[in-house]
Image 1 (cartoon, rainbow, N blue to C red):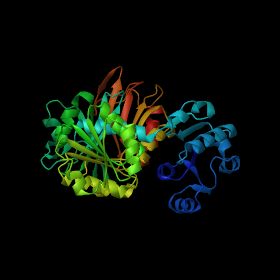
Image 2: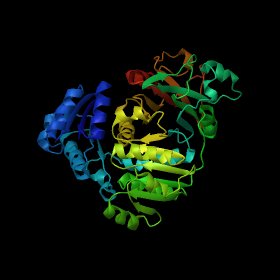
Image 3: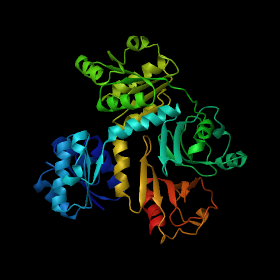
Image 4: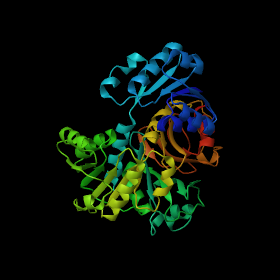
Amino acid sequence: MRIIIVGAGAVGSYLAERLSTGGQDVVVIEDNEARAAELQESIDALVLHGNGASVQMLEKAGAEDTDLLIAVTSSDGANILACYTGTQLGAKTTIARIEDGELREGADRLGVDLVIDPSATAAEGLVGIVGLGGASELIEFADGKLVMVGGRVDQNAAITAGPLRELRVRQAEWGWVVAALVRDGRTIVAHGDTVVRPGDHALLMTTSERVDDATRLLGVKRRHIDRAIIVGGTRLAEITADVMTEAGLSVVVIDEEPDRCRYLAGRHPYALVINGDPTDPDVLAELDLGPKDVVLALSGWDEVNLMGCLVAKASGAGMAISRFNRIAYVGLLSGLGIDAAVSSRLMAASAILRFVRQGQVEQVATFSDTDAEAIEIEVAASSEAVEKSLMDLDLPVGVIIGGISRDGTTFVPDGSTVVKAGDHIIFFSLPRDIVESSRLFTA
């Protein structure tokens, strides 16, 4: 697939690296010369310096033969114009990052096939994590009937009792599968002889009614959250304030800019808005933080978010969730008391990768500390996998089947499960095995 990415900011550069590594034919257009040069040194793709919305630059990038144009600059207007121009030149499908609600209306008439709003998606994801009260991920598949739960494995968690194969035998009603572990920055695709260790970041697939069982298996301690303390006055922070209020939580917003605080107080009258330094222990001490409080550090600065979370946990907060922009920081979160992390680039990637993967892909999920993906795909009638058991499929070693949705029912399969045409299969895969696995179910 030939892909043009307009904009090499946090989202664009991440996508360019991810897609080029996966063997896609990628061209990036970036108007910042230094950023374009830096990206060209780090990825195996063509990077052009120029205006990605101009006819001349899109022609140079080969828009007439492009399967997908992705516009993810910081300007909504530039993204829409790039999609419009690309469509006129012959680009088959276009995706634009648009945050302004008024501009989203009618974007389809201007050549935009898909609109993504990572902040809105991230805010909804935060509600799920906070509602679960301790997990680091809560990702729904098959219309919410299958759920991937992620969390840091506790010292005394039941899942550490022995190899996964033996543990499943001891479970009276087995309804889960461990897809992968992230240990010391390395992804381990789980198999029967895998032993889970305390401190591992485990990704576990289960049915929606067994989410509580899954969290207990990981040793994740459920917390009832009453109040959300939001650090920062960003758009993500604003949207999160709204959705947390709708979820029934009391909301406090802390920001250092007086003018921004006045705006937030007018825009969100239900929230307590505090003008202060969110990393100052004295500011947080005035809130008398306790186990029923969650701190959501959503400013635009990674350093502020990380420090705000650490100070909040030291001050007694039950949960602390940090927004991050730099992937390199994710590995530092483990063991520091930060419960979960969100990233706009990962939210954007999950939405966009669905359009890149071949086959009848329904959903793609990416994760904060591993480059593996969870993919929901519909099994084609012509697929070679139809009427074969999972144990008889020639699946790559780096692939785990986590769940199946069939005719309105969902279940976690075992090796004897036979694949049927029309099944929605959720599989977890390392990047190198995604294309091969997708073809197995769609070819």
